[in-house]
Image (cartoon, one colour):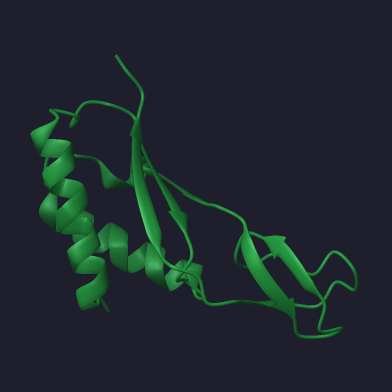
Length: 110
């Protein structure tokens, strides 16, 4: 299911892609903060990007997640890692700590 948040992000990305004439470029979105369920966010975002950018193969848009602060569910240690990575101290799952969301658009020049 696509949420209003992902729809807003997709509209913003689409405006930038169209405004800068980037439809034929290799595109990368760099995401930091805000997403505990990376897979659900990415699926919803790609669905909405396909609606907003019908002439772009959204499967080819690379989505990269920056490391962020997490708290280990096993040993309660704090560590920095992308969402979904395990604690380097004990191997347990981590819970991303609240952080402001940021989505950056990068592209390769042709």
